[in-house]
Image (cartoon, rainbow, N blue to C red; front, side, top):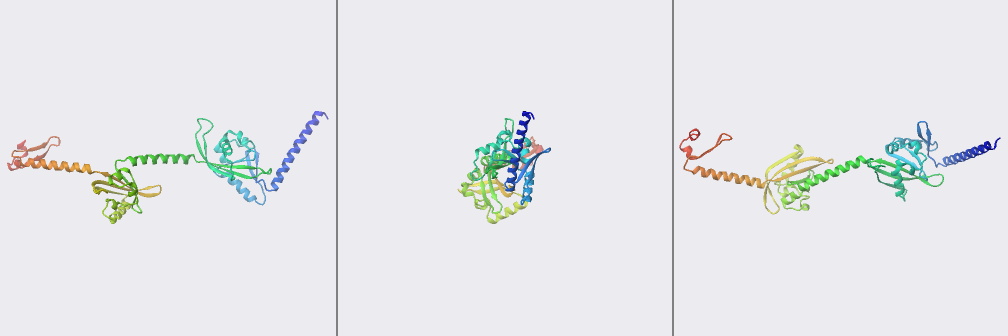
Length: 351
């Protein structure tokens, strides 16, 4: 036999012996219960096989659950080589599983988030949980927010431990939370800057739970003094029974309106207000919002206007001559004084 051929056989024999030794080590580990499942390559991709034994039913159920859960699950061994990737992880990280299995996670660009978490967290208690930010691998990649957990796995046959990592994409929830915060900020700005008073009440207790600055200035109360009071206690309603009646009406109609309501401030001043109370749902609970508009100046101007008009009419009535006022735009008689009527002049004759 040629020497080269002999050397090839020796090398092949050594390789077979190494594989046999590896298989024997794995068999011993299986017998000791240190291996729960095997990942095997097939024509259709990697497949997970749970091992039969005393806990075969449990192992099979665990493997099936990992395959169907929506959370991404990735397992690495003590050398940080990828040993398992479930379908959710394949989709979340756009992984080529056949290329990833057996490869160090640090050499897989798609797993940069996992590598960062492993390097940054010691898992002194055997577990780490928190949020991870995936900013992508280039500028065009959208930022994703992940709820992540790292857990130390049971020791492998060499005495070292691997890591089981789970991920859940919470980007949608984070965006929704950000939108809620923006809406709350906008509402708070409107609430604080409004030139009408706003009171928020609990319909069950009928007590004030919030008030804007305009309302506290109008009433002369500090905010902490208003909180916990009922409407009748600040002069909006006559008494506790009137307050109960108003809330019963609100429950039935969802809205109550008061016009020209006299309101006495804490300092004893009197203001006239319009109040519109609405009952609505907020985050699954009912609240009452009272919008209060101070119409004191408007009412004063209306009263002054009526008084001036009445004064002028009295003067016109005592004038000795004929006085006739006709609105050309509306084509109607506005005023005829008493002298005109006493002389029996008709409107046509005066014109």
